[in-house]
Image (cartoon, helix red, strand yellow):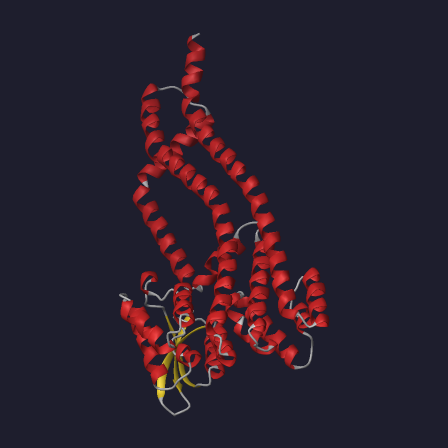
Length: 392
């Protein structure tokens, strides 16, 4: 969740920064790592709506093109700010241009807007400042972001059809229980016939749902509001993973996806010239909040002289196969390349799992929905079938 941290900067000026963290203590620690002196910390919710936020990928692509064309960094950001029509991105970009004209580094200017620029993106820009090749660094970040979007889109696409099927089946079943079943109940009540037990239970359930429909609707609305409040408190980049983690039988796949994101992030940062311990700190936003403590422990082990591969394995952030690949990369001096290959391997593993899951779950959901609707229809017409048999 977001925290508003009241801080003092290097010039003893008091200001406020927004930091996303799992707890107030972690927010205070992040403020210290940003070279601020934290004074007060309080929870805060993000106020900017999704349509009023800076698109990092679009910003990186446009800035890369402008800088590669020979336009100065200040002029490029000023041009993007002048073209922007949305209030929040326009204000953020204008402030970036102002700080650059005052002599601040781009990464330092971005750190003052943590809601718009995640730490990972700031780290990529900081690494580019040491090599003076911002377009190449932005290109690497865009490739990295594209890989993450591909994995997320595969999981989303595979789950879309089962979700639509389940929603449609639930809607049809609810309509039958609330409207159709009570109509049959009124007809059967006036017939004076003894109904089968299954039909009696179904009709009583339908009458109850129709009578209590306002209260049930209110309860459903409250449950939806609580669920939305819980989801909104999660980091937007982690929401789909949080849902996947709570799905039956998907916890291991969610962990594999997190590891592939972690390895690809570390590969990008190490390739940009960032040392391992700093890369481990910058990669914290891509893992689960519960695993960020493990990443801190891995960083402490690396600072103590342990290899990165063994440190990740000791804190549970490395599979046995990944451990072998990373050790090979450390021996050959190509850890960044081996991290990228390990991430690619886990992404392929995730793709295979998604294909298998979608080929099994969708038919199962279709059969389940058909059975539910079929049982409802059978119990509705069972008295009619028994009456027609008696007439014969």
